[in-house]
Image (tube, rainbow, N blue to C red; front, side, top):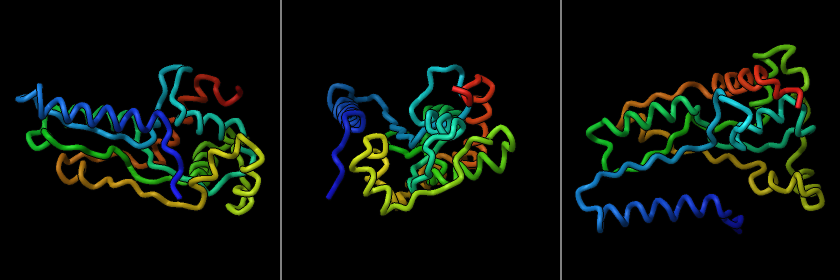
Length: 193
C-alpha cells in the first residue's frame, strides 16, 4: 500500500514533465537540466524558512518530545546553489536530471548531532525515542504524529551518485549541514520560540 501523493510532490512531477515536453516540442534547441533536491537545510537568512529547516528549529525547542525512527534525504542549500552553477556550465549536464542530496539522515541522528556539537545550546533537544509500533498506534489518534507514521522505520537512501560521478559535485557532510542550520537558527533566536 502506498501513501497518497501530496499536492507539492505531484506539482513538482507535473512541472518537470511539462519542461521536458516543452524542450522536445516547441523548445527545440533549448537545453534542460533538472535538479531534484532532497530536504533542503543549511544556514537561514531570516525567519521565513522552509518546512525542512523547521524540523531543526523544532528539535532545538524540544519538539517532538519523543524521537521517531524517521529519516529523509538532506542537502545543504549552499551545495544546491553550487550544483545549479555546475549544471549550467558543465558540458555533460544538458538533457539530464540529477538528485541533489548528501545522503539519508534519521531524525534521531539529527538530535544526537545537535546535542554532541552544540552543547548547552542544544539543552532542549529531545533524547528519548518512541518505538515505531507505538508511534503507528498513537499516530492514528494524534494528528500531529500522523505525518511521521507512513515512513517510520523505513530507510530511503537517495540516489546521490550521478551528480558526483557526472558533474564532480561534492556536497558537505550532513552533520555539518545540521549544525550550521541550527547555529543560524540560534543566532535568530529561533531556539526560544
